[in-house]
Image (tube, rainbow, N blue to C red; front, side, top):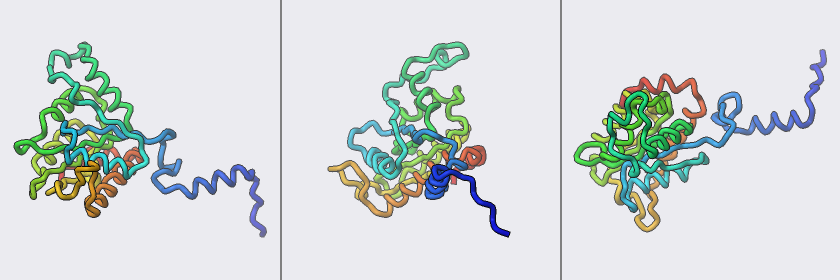
Amino acid sequence: MLPPVSRQTPAGLLADRRTSLLPPSLHPDVNPYRHPMKILTLNGSLRARSSNGAVLRSALALTDATSATADIAALPHFHPDQDAEGATPPAPVAALRRTVADADAVLIVSPEYAHGVPGVLKNALDWLVSSADLLDKPTAVLTASPSPTGAAYAHGQLRETLRTMSAAVIPDACRDFTAIGPKTDPATGTVTDPATLQDLRTALTALTTAAATPNTRSTASRSSPS
């Protein structure tokens, strides 16, 4: 018996072919996003020429997603009375919550200060605790330190805080980079070490894949720091 003749129009055939050429994470049956993927970044270092800034710039250069960096330095100190039910949050806080809610994924980059998370970054997270904007949001944590032992304390604290906030922390998108200084170029403010760049590529791929696959979020959000 002869196979049935396709009644699909040439335009439909062309559309099917274009779809078949897409990588799996961007296939319309997998990826529900019809707009360019948006990543919101939070940088725990305020230094203009920080190594964590170099990590962030290099990471974003490895993805086609659009990105924006939250101005966490503009946030007031967390105040419970301004965060109570019915209270109007300060304008910078409201702006942060809107950008988090509008993002498809969140990328957090941070150094370590005195075996802990920088205060400016923890302050930003404190303002997000009572909102649901990070709930099941695919989130990556990248920490970097000039120390040969890395920023392990800050890394673990950030992942535990985010897990408690029910963010969908993606384990494969998290990295702690040790001895980061020689791996960056101060003149360009970027990472130059090939192994570190490959690690960043792997992490960003894991983050964007998770953001494009919503049914993986609830599982990731339950993951404990490794």
